[in-house]
Length: 138
Image 1 (cartoon, rainbow, N blue to C red):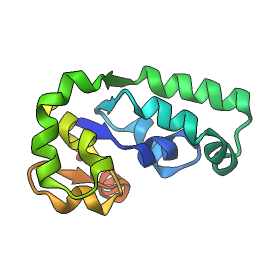
Image 2 (cartoon, helix red, strand yellow):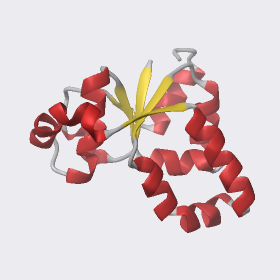
Image 3 (cartoon, rainbow, N blue to C red):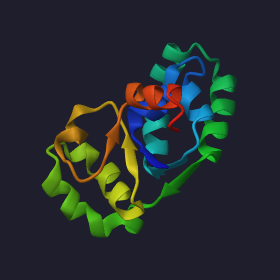
Image 4 (tube, one colour):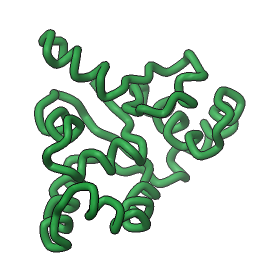
């Protein structure tokens, strides 16, 4: 299974005590993300620090561990799918995730209801993945 991670899922994974972090380290999947997601994480670093309870040093270690497990794609790699993606969903902030999923024939791991507006690509929430994991499906 290939999963494109959205921003909020990545932010959740940073917290080592979250359900998303548990799933990230437990399920058999190839994790993918647009490269800009790294800048988004840096932009929201303070919020992630507060929510996770990690020190800055622990955060950096955790960030490096997580980033080593994700294949990042430049926008130029999926740019041919951006127009199609913009026709499928209303939230422009989600277009890159959908375009990357189209390029790589992946599902999207997101809790954002806007991404589910389209029916071309499967969108799995953290809860969906947890249920599949418990049932032994992933």
